[in-house]
Image 1: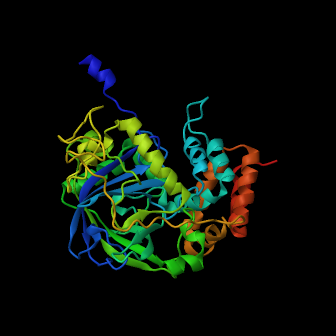
Image 2 (image 1 turned 90 degrees about the vertical axis):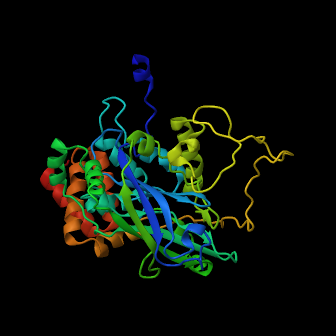
Image 3 (image 1 turned 30 degrees about the horizontal axis):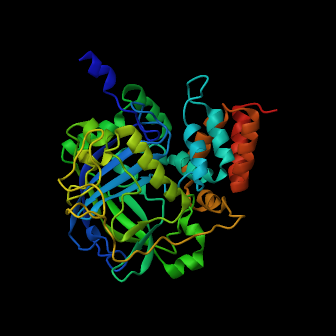
Length: 438
């Protein structure tokens, strides 16, 4: 027993360590088979089992829910053609568009190696060295960083997916998951008070709601672009740090998510959930940007390290609506496999690889030098945020800036002023009140 105790823990996730999840179904409400031939999207009224996981980004397993942080929002569809995963965020943009910047974003959110405590200098250094991340930071610090509940938190694919219909025509979609109960946030002061007594408030709120039959739901919608639209708009529609304007490409409803079952065992069903961008189904090619390409490799590698080489034999990760024949045999449990040989080609009725009828590849995109990383951030501040959200944004930024070193404060204020003059002026005014600068 004691030996089991010291060996039973698996490595936690490198990011999104603290989170929760639940299970339910996706129901198609609007037919989009004219743009995507994926089986689970073909018929109005068709239901597909799903799992959704919500998580903070920087927190380790067991850390508090109610911290100011961007959030993960990941969905697994258990379709009749295999599993399809979307590993998204609660903001419509991501913090970087070059996969090489991913380690900066991740490691700067961890503890300082000397103090083993969060460090405002590391966080601010990251934000100013990868300035396109400021767009996401503004969404997070203007209120979205602390949802009132996971039931009121939106989700976004962030990537623009390339899909095709039965005729092989190519389209491009960006996914939005908007809570039917409305998007609601919590003030930092209220969150601090609740966190003192109930650090896992969001986790327990979701569990209790589902147990009481108050099933949360979200409307799943997509923005749709044609190949001509992509040619006219340019590579910016694949930039994770930018939105696709809804006034030009409005939302088209696809269906509803409903969560109606909690995990019977949290570790087995939620902690072992493995979302991987490499899990795709016919009709959905993935995204052509380099971050998506990197995530397909990195996520798979991370999950093999964390849960073992047979990670997709773990029940919660199995595509249980379709019979699978894989080459994976033996190795670390859980294991599976039939009687046929696990190589191809073979002469004994062993598994054969899936070969799609149409093998259309992802399009190639090239972003030219000189991309404007601040145009949408400036528009967010000036035209999208309410005055209350702008005040919340400034207050939250100042609370981080005031503990940072002077050169980082200066660099940050210059960048925020570049985004919007009023934004920078108000931050400088608050900083003059809050600290004495030389």
